[in-house]
Image (cartoon, rainbow, N blue to C red; front, side, top):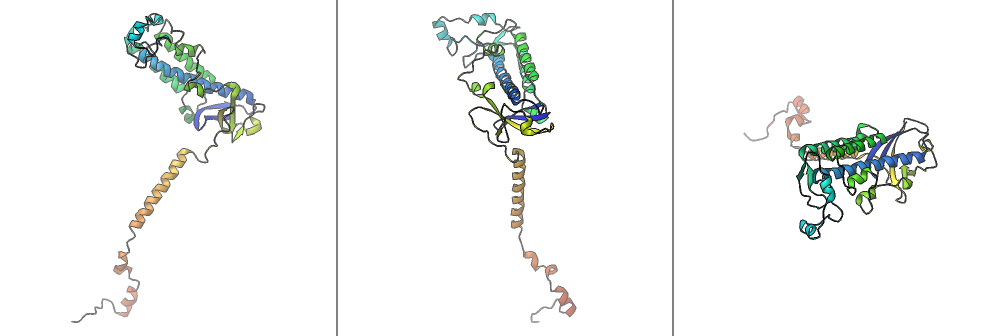
Length: 290
């Protein structure tokens, strides 16, 4: 199995194993689904953190309005009355005005937060350092854990316009958002290795050979963005160690220059004619009048 270290730009994403004979059309789709799946988990974790703190989403026509404006326009949050958290709500005002402030109690809040931590650990970039390959089953497991936590805390469900429910139902609208810029369509995804595009019409072995123990760094890119930057010759960690070595060497040379004192040459042990004068018997002769 060829080990692929997938990156987006210079940022590590995940490890993936694939046979050398894999069609690149299939591999590109697999990598893209994993990449987008991880982004989905990250978006859900971010929204669920807000859910734990400030409750469910307000209706779109009430978001950003003050209480006085809501009363003046006679608007009512019908879903807020239906979708109450299990164990009762604790009012925590949302300063941004996106959520209704009916947050879960501390026990239910910890259920959400603990699940978020577990889901983040599954798709964490630290898995690369640990040498753990991420699979689509792991991503689905993280999504199922998050879905289960929401069902525990909100047994009556969430409003249809809540982004968490929309994410679970694959109805999310990311147009015009920063998160939408990170998502790559499967049909527009490209894989690059060693400054070469891995064309979908070929196999992985056409580029890396038939050695199944090969490890390569693959960069995922959207079509039309051009070739990604090449990998540096040495890693950032090695570069830091090299700079640290040169800095220490400079400090050592500086200390040697400061200690360049030749006063020791006037000492008796440094006199290279002392032995000659000793045999001639002219040692310790003092030339001064008595």
